[in-house]
Length: 122
Image (tube, rainbow, N blue to C red; front, side, top):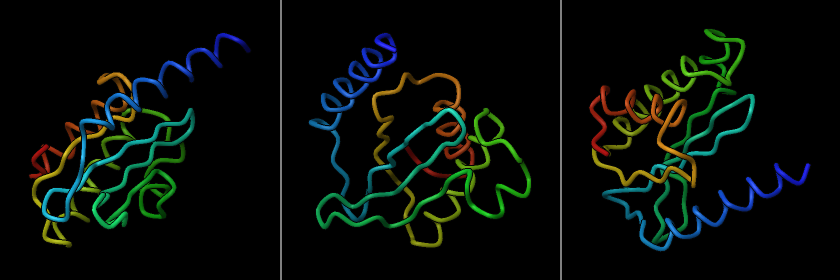
């Protein structure tokens, strides 16, 4: 268990370091990602007002119908596609990418690449 606690502490330290540099505004909100072992979540956040403008996750009904398990790259790609659609509905085309202290690899990369393919500029 100590290994998991240390790993979590290192991720939180990286996240805090990144958040000092990343700031989202209404025209260019922050695309924040959280990854658990079974699901992946993302939000578009306006940091000036502290509001979530849009969100998507593997727990969304339409994504859950397509894929029963949300902890893989295919699910992350669907979430990336969904967040890009939500951004378009709100008139957002550019975002600041906040990877949440996770490495840009695997599910995080799949979500980001899927959002880029669907015309969301990171």
